[in-house]
Length: 65
Image 1 (cartoon, rainbow, N blue to C red):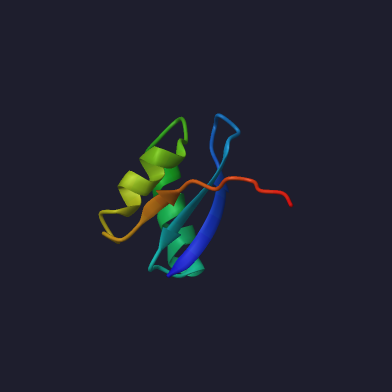
Image 2 (spheres, rainbow, N blue to C red):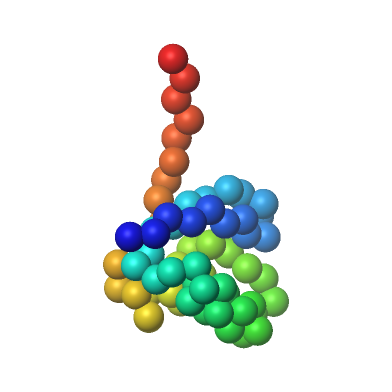
């Protein structure tokens, strides 16, 4: 499993996981961007799930100690 950090048009930091490597993710991201005017992480992960059923958004919380 690979873990990625991405920003969308809302400038929100999100993370997702996928079984696809970074080269394949980059290819799919270009394809996704060609099909849309706005880019939202939830939409991208939904698009990605057509190629990788294990892809999903991960919510990350800060913790301090």
